Image 1 (cartoon, one colour):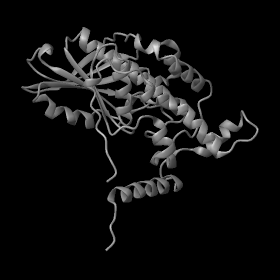
Image 2 (cartoon, rainbow, N blue to C red; image 1 turned 90 degrees about the vertical axis):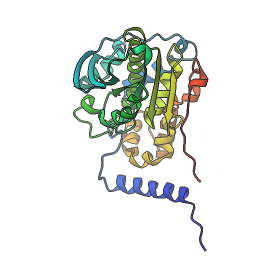
Image 3 (spheres, rainbow, N blue to C red; image 1 turned 180 degrees about the horizontal axis):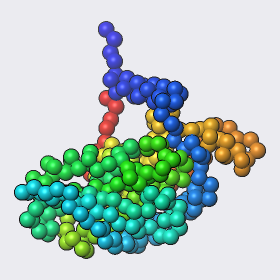
Image 4 (tube, one colour; image 1 turned 90 degrees about the horizontal axis):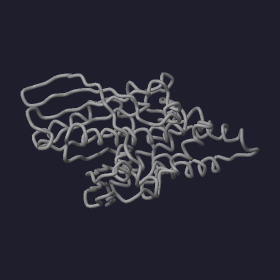
Length: 303
């Protein structure tokens, strides 16, 4: 009798599928236009400046979304808001024009004051371009008097650059830029919920990439908030250098771009450069959240 470890089997099948999908070019690869040049250098410098000391005192910028009602029922109301991304001038200019304005959906119970509600901000996982998936999670939460806020990430949905296909970011710098701007927008929305909307209890959550960003927001927010990363790696190194997405990465294009600066470049050198760059996304290097007891990790194990 042959015993099959299903966890190992699924892991192998995932990698085989990822490899076939990339090699057959059914879908375009990540980072087909290289590293991002001076944008990558700028982002590496800015992210290194976030912590350990600066990150602890990095105050959010208050935003004022312009709201419109999408629908309302007897018990709930859904609104969508738009606001100019609150990042500084250097980051703003590095963004594609399509990402300059942030979009957010806000699903809340009716006829209940914010002081008697909580609100959870849901951040996007890889490929989650619209509000719908995360808003579905908000339906059951309404019964618990919990509102749901859903942020559309830069480079996604209506904020996606014209030349980008799906979630396949064109440059490595885009990945860091997506993360840094998402963190700033999320912290500003939490600040708005607290200071303008009057919510006393707030949280942030996300799946996969969204979970990494949620952990970063929980770490860098100046006040204690509930933080719930779901099935998220500790950094993007895991996804792009070890996981399935390594099969969907344009290593040859990255090597050619890197070779413009070095006489001889191997794929292994390119992979090592990628590891060094993406190590900036390692949440284990971020400050400890203000209230570690309010952090809940949802993880998976291989059985």
